[in-house]
Amino acid sequence: MKKNKFYVTTPIYYVNDVPHIGHAYTTIAADTIARYKAASGHEVYFLTGTDEHGRKIEQTAETNGEAPIDLADRVVVKFQDLWKLLGISNTDFIRTTEPRHREAVSEIWRLVQKSGDIYLDEYEGWYDVRNEAFITETQLEEIMKLPEEGRPQLEKIKEQSYFFKLSRYQEPLLRHYSEHPEFIKPGYRRNEVVSFVEGGLRDLSVSRTNFSWGIPVPGPEGHVVYVWFDALTNYLTSLGFPGKTGDFERFWPADIHLVGKDILRFHAVYWPAFLMSAGLPLPKTVFAHGWWTVEGEKMSKSLGNVVDPYQVVEEFGSEIFRYFLLREIPFGQDGDYSKRSLVNRVNGELGNGLGNLVSRSLGMIERYLGGIVPEPAEFTEREKEIEDFYRETDRLVRSDLEELAFNRALSRIWEFIGLVNRYVDSEAPWKLAKQEGKEKRLGTVLWTLAESIRMISILIYPFLPETSLGIRGKIGLPADAGVENAEWGHTKPGTSVVKGENLFSRIKEEEN
Image (cartoon, rainbow, N blue to C red):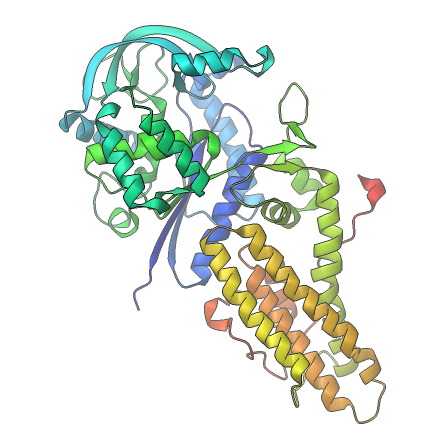
């Protein structure tokens, strides 16, 4: 049977500094949707990587007294190692310094040039080095209103440059936004982009001559390709472009580009315009998420409050970090990271909720039935309520994941966990075990708990893969259980279970 294809990407991350919480957030979100799609029977291609060219990289390397490629080689390992720590299941990791990427960028340039959309002129104006973006006079006025320590690093430049006829694509872009409202999400971000494009588009400088760390423009010497023209092409490179067969033919256009809101304009305006010019299909959706503050303050090195993902994982574990980021805020909105909130979620939801349910349920099966799942007898309305609630939860969680509503999906799963915990309290298996003639009722209750735990392990898999697999190991469920096992009623009597170690340890308040 032919599988449906699904292609999801993160941005490629700039290697001028080590990974931070924003990088982890986007990548964990992409991993979650990739795992969900794979478990639902799709053939998934999941891409992440690093952006290694540009003026900022060159400057940082100069400051460090090293070559740009040495800086890139050193920092890229930090990203790759972090993704392993976080259980990221990417198909490919691309670096823009790879020969395959240079070939793809050169081909896109030639296609756009062939369309008559590239011309030589002179650029004079301001350039934001950190964000690798050209600054308009209007943007400059807004920047100058910021406190000095909050302003980007600007350079006044005057140089010969190749330009892309972005102005030519104002109407085609607006038409595409109108005909494909799903192209930009969330909806309020779409409105921002539409407003920006309706305000008029100026042709875009797409080459630089005042530095050399980049991909050379095909043909003339002295020009390197503008870093965003270079970087955006990575989504094609990974699929084997300029070859039009194999992965490119099967997976392009991308189903979803996940990006931070600060780079939405590059993905929702420049990228589709480049693709239109090159005669290539546009991605289906660009989804922009928000930023994280820390304890209510903007993250900055000067404040010393930048959240180090390595440190959080070392202190709390990768699953807890994943859970907090996905659970704390609606994906798309801004959020605040605080250790107190994280600890509260660990103790209240992971420990007292999920961990407690698994521990006491399997513990009772061990204690009263020798660790063997019993044959259920007659089901009452209480068991029917749990089954019905699960079926509805499963349906709604799938719908939420299609919309990238991660926190809402997790909220629904924990409502189900809460219901099952209340079922344990009301049925009190420890009392049934002491009463004569209640053996069948005890068996029904404990089977229902085993089946509920099985279903929970499937529901949480995209979000908490290690925890899910840990639970599956306790209840004899195959590690690759996917959508085919998601129907209620498949726990087999006679299955051996083991309580084992607690899933989560309670974090003491004084430790924080």
